[in-house]
Every structure is written in C-alpha cells, then in structure tokens.
Image 1 (tube, rainbow, N blue to C red):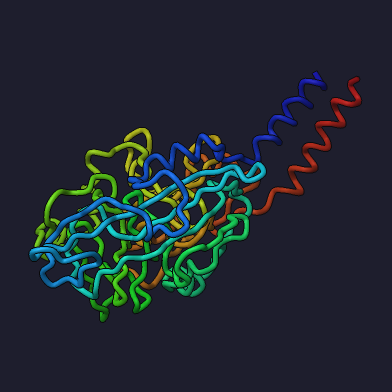
Image 2: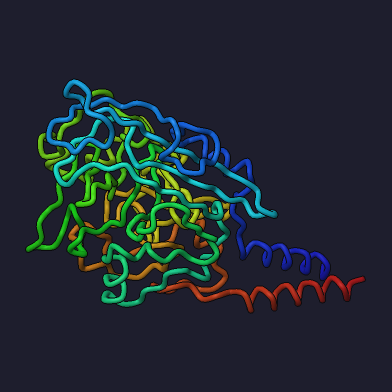
Length: 376
C-alpha cells in the first residue's frame, strides 16, 4: 500500500508541470497553414518571385507596378521550421502584402521586409507568468501601449533578421499580413476607445495602413484564412462591419468553427481563430495577454476574441486579475483560467498570478521517491 501511495504521489507531481507540443512535425503542421509562396528560407524575401495580386490603383500608392490603371503587386511569404540542436525553430519571412485587394483609407501601401526566427511553441508554466500586472494602472500602462511587443521573452529565442523597427508587430498572419498591437497611436483601443478618442478606420477585412504604409491587423478577420476575390469596401460602407466591428470579426469565421491557425506570434506561440476544437467560441479562460492553456498537454496559445485586446495583448502567459484596462470600453472586467490552466495549479489561485510551484513540486517528488526507496 505504501509503494502504491509513493507511485501515485510521483505521478501527481509529474502532472504539475506541462510540456508543449513543439516537435518538428508540430511546427511543420503550423507552417503548412501559411499561404506561402516559397518553401525555403530566402536571403531576402523581397528578392523572391511572389504571386501576383491585381487591384484598383485608385487612391493608393501602389506597392508594385501600375499597369493600365491597375495596381499589380506580388505577395511573398515563407514559413520554415528547423531543428537547431534539439530546439525547434520557425522562421517567418513576409513582404507584408495581402493575397487580396485592400481598401486603405489612410497612408500609403508599402512592401516590407519582415524576417524573424523564434523557438516554436516554447514551454511555459501557468505558475510562472511572463506578465504579471496587479493594478489597473500597471495593466493599462502595459497592454495599452503599442510598443509593449518590442521586448520578447528570452525563452522564445527571438532573432530579427529583417527591417529593424517591428516593435509594434506582435506576429504574422497566415496570409502574410502583420499583426499589430491592439492599440492606436493614442494608446487606446482603436475600435472601442474611451469617450473623447476617435475611432480608427479599416477596410472590410479589418486591416488598414499606418502612416509609413504598413498594412496590418489589430483584430482577427476571416480574410486571413479565406482571402476574398476582387475589390473590397471600407468597413464604414459595410452595414454589419460598421454597426458592430467586433461581432462582424467573429462572424467572418462562421465557416471555421474549429481550432484554426491564423498566425504565429513573435514569442513563438500559435495564434488561433475564435473557436476551440469542439466548435465553442472562446469568450473566457484567457489571461490578460489573450492567451490560454487550451489542452491537457499544456499548450498555450493566443485566441482571437471579440473583446480587447482581440489578438495578442502581451507575451504570456499572463495573470488573471479581477479588473480590466482603462483604454477600452470593450475589454473584460475580469479574467479567469481555463479548466486546463486550473489543472496545472497545485496551489490555490488568486486573482493575480498563481504561486510558483517549483519548491512544492521538488518536495513532493523527494517524498515519493523516498517512499519507493524505503519499500525496496
């Protein structure tokens, strides 16, 4: 009986920590979701041969060539995984141009050289959050600032090989368009700001250009996985989009009500659409970073949500406070763990970060091994 108790105790201790699915095959499965134009790592993605996209040149600084009144550009995208001495890495290269037409109501429209490599789906621990913000002020001063994504956790092994200023980039969508932080230049929600701030305009694929011509997303769009053919309108000219942009964003995934890869974040974690494998839309269970432990294996990923910060709010895991940010009128008032996150906690969970379990786990393992040793 004592031996059985020791074995069960060891098993329980082993379940406290979790290991993510980050094999080469896991990485390659995610890379396959990207709409790549080449299947290798290029010296410079801009120098490769891409796939032509032809759209109206009216009112747009064409990022390609203007031919007979049409703007023709080439989108270019690569997603390659490799094994670097036992660490699986994914390298993303994109020129940032979409595989569809765009309605860009502000700025120019420019080709980019985004090129970074990062450890794929690194192991993280709910007991040791990367971001732990315990006051409304601390939360807002971090999540509501566009440049929070300039610093990537060291465990992610992030290396930038491309354009130098990608501080506000949080990741890259499977269509090659970059994902930006969830904030406007005014440090507020661009779509549901507090009173006194102006809404930002986007097209009906929910993307737009900033002043330098970088076309980007702040919120998920079905256009990421299913690019429309032909011209698209401005969101303001689409009744559903204009009346409730967040609901429109979620409805654009009506044909993708399973766990769907929509991108990769700069910290190496996957970004999924708004649904779990069971067809249930994610409305809770995520932390302040919009990340969630979503299976019993211990995988952590970001999910598209209808609430601010919409995609990647910070590099997680984060904590679960009982308050929200002050830079959005469409943010959660509190955060709660998924059932999977709760299962990885071996101590009581507070509204802030869960306590670190390393010393407790070491003690449990020591006791269980001692019991087994004494039995024999």
